[in-house]
Amino acid sequence: MSNQIAVLAGDGIGPEVTAEAVKVLGAAKHGLEFKEALVGGAAYDATGMPLPNETLELCRQSSAVLLGAVGGPKWDQLPPADRPEIGALLKLRGELHLFANVRPAKVFRSLLSASPLKNTGGTIDLVVVRELTGGIYFGQPRERRDGGNLAVDTCTYTREEVRRIAKVAFQIARQRKRHIVSVDKQNVLETSRLWREVVDELAHDNQDVSVSHMLVDNCAMQLIRDPLQFDVILTENMFGDILSDEASMLTGSLGLLPSASISELKDGKVFGLYEPVHGSAPDIAGQGRANPIAAILSGAMLLKYSLGDDEGAAKIEAAVEKTLDDGLRTADIFVAGTKLVSTSEMGSAIVANL
Image (cartoon, rainbow, N blue to C red):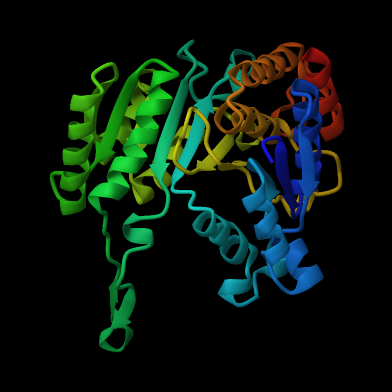
């Protein structure tokens, strides 16, 4: 079990980019056992369920899950519970207790021209740590009243929910520059006042990491004005949903961005589901045009967090950067003067640079 990885390729470009991530992972770390299973629309077409019981059980028996992408217009007319995004992805997060979403945003120097930061001469390297299973997205009641003229959504957080996500942020910060910006709206929201109170308690007990607070509207502005000031951003579910997407656009392409949805860190390791930020992109599926770098970097996160292999993760990241420095580009980041390569060619080049 310690070296078993559940591979859920999914829909659209998912199988193409996941294949390259597996190829790179296998080259970076020997002894991994990859086991494939159906998920998303592909699973629904084959079994009538977006998350078959066999797939869920495989995930539970594995050290980590590598996911490609799920969904597409083909399945948009299904009942909500059967749609891949809800019936597969959200259910996986709930069943596997994945309460922390970790989203790095890094600008590679060779791709700075594609970033909004291109005229600043600086690159960003930050991580958004987002609480994933609480807040207004999950609070009850959520309903329509007064004949449909009044809508109610409820934002709730418990002290323990805040504490466990904050602990993840502290542990990640220790592997980086040891600085957390905790983002809330404590001047308006009671949940944010609780959030800040709990983060301050943890800051008092973890003084090797510096902690500052920022209101969410100011943080949104500061990400545009001076993103280089951030290292780890810690925030709740809805704020994190918005801020992580904002941060991602500073990199220049969604095809470069990995993510992890993880449970509590124990002994330096964690169970997690690792996936690229981008969607299934059915319009380019099967054409060899998809950028596999986000999936490959998700594999690097898998090594780092779930298998405790910091060295292997760093080697993958360095190989990706070397490949980009060599001028190889998939269609989404291609510019004149660079070499256009296919999905598999990009993966093979990264393997060669390992």
